[in-house]
Amino acid sequence: MKRGTVVGLIGTVALSVCASAGAAEVDDTRLKQAAPSDWLLPGRDYAGQRYSPLDAINTRTLGRLVPKWIYQSGIPATFQATPIVADGVMYVSLPFSSVVALDARTGRQIWRYEHERGKGRLCCGPANRGVSIGYGKVFVATVDGHLVALDARTGAPAWNIALADAAADPTEQQSTLGKSEKLATAAVSGSTGVGANMAPLVHGGRVIVGITGVGYGLHLEADRPGAPLGAVVGIAGRYGRPGFIAAYDAATGNKVWQFDTTRPGWEGGYTTTTSYGMALPRDIAGEKAAAAKHTQAWRFGGGSVWSTPALDAALGLIYFGIGNPSPQAADESRPGDNLDTVSLVALDVETGKLKWAYQQVPHDLWGYDVASPPALFDVTIDGQTIPAVGEASKLGWYFVHDRRDGRLLFKSDPFVPQENLFARPTEAGVRITPGAAGGSNWSPAAVDGKSGRAYVAAMHMPMIYQRKVIPATPDKPEIVYYELKPAQEPRWGTLSAIDLKQGGKIAWQARTEQPLIGGTLATAGGLVFTGEGNGDFSAFEASTGKRLWSFNCGAGVNAPPISFALDGHQYIAVAAGGSQIWGYPQGDAVIVFGLSE
Figure 1 (cartoon, one colour):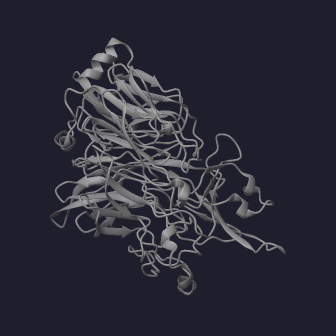
Figure 2 (cartoon, rainbow, N blue to C red):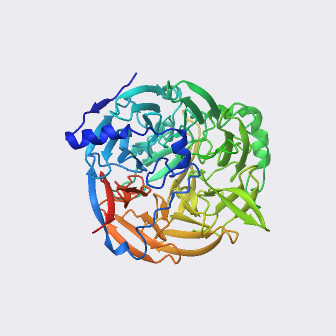
Figure 3 (cartoon, rainbow, N blue to C red):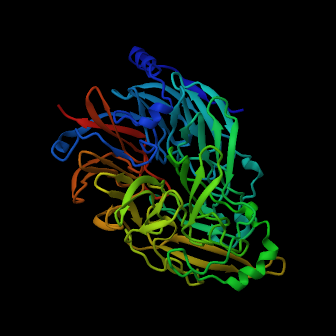
């Protein structure tokens, strides 16, 4: 069993802070209340709105916003974590799933847990999206597919469990492509396997977490530094396994329930349109003819869980997205609709039983994972208040559902350009946008329930989707594979305000130099914060979209910001460590901003 190591306390200041950290244990009552001064949950509250009620930093005082402290981890790698703050202590997961506790007043390190990874290649890179806290523990889901509980006072491991047997999963082999192919010797940054990078959800004495990597094609690195992902390659076959989300006892790590994202019957129907009326160019006759040969395709079906669920405690339901089916892009070995991949799903939080699922793209070929975490809010339609759940999709629409039964209430106007959304690959290559990059990728959106707006960070990065054939030779059959790669053309980001009171109309949109990946924060001070890959961390006026303030952090800001308060002062915090997959400069910093005196 891997236990990891802990770096001890630093100095008397750290000792006193550490002692105070245990004075008010984070229990279910505190998690439900989500006091504005803390940031106890990945989305601040169980609704996942990423909205701070703090307003000391506002449009009038913003000019005095300056860095207060910087913590450098010494790990310059893709940094996507949401910091957690409780009682003056900040908990941050680092790349490769190490964890630090920091004095939130000064940035001094209190303790540091170094995660000792397995020797196998990581399925999904070094990124970890955050920890969760509760019951005197800090919980981290690791890039090598473990769930670890740490003592919140000391960082000492309390328990460490493997979420799945990664070695048992078949992985795509580059050798399948043949030695003559350039892609056969390209550097691989990801493949099918088991990992976890979401921040767990803590509730009711349990820790809820899902696995990733099960829906991968081969992720090949770019051929030059600073460029985005080189390509995603899909090959039909039996690669991977079902994804899952599961609940574990917070005290012991024992599994309570598990929901598999692909199951017997996943073929479903043979839908020729999406549920919102878009035509799908499917070879239904060919799929049905192949069905008898692929009755076990669900066993390799993929469906990663990328982001922390939202929770409606009153309904007893959690809401989360499921990723693409496996193999990615190649569909010959997986006929049918491939339920419940590329879906927004609601489960009973106590049992893990499926309540409803809404599939955004049946039989996905394009990598349109439901990756951005959902948020809960109320909408009024025809004078009736409806409990809703919203999700910013890779497709470029913000979907809003009745969270009781999954009924689609509306989808927004497109927040990125859309073209050939569901075009099949050609040997010449077809341009698709948004494509696998998104739209809104894993970036969490912020929701201001009072103004009725969702703030969505997104990317315009058109993709080329190509079918390739390696001719048969006397000793080898013909090989067909599919390649998804960024188009060689201008790309940019969009920050959009979605009006939830007006059926998803775009209230305003700001275009950014870089495609946006990382997420947003909205505050009661009338501001929206987000970062860019060029290092700019910026504040926009929530009512108009005007950029009011910016600070360059020296590395890509590709993580979600938060806000908290200490000693009567409001602060904004964000990780600045870039993103390798998008070619953004990497670093190792957590930066906290506050108002100058």
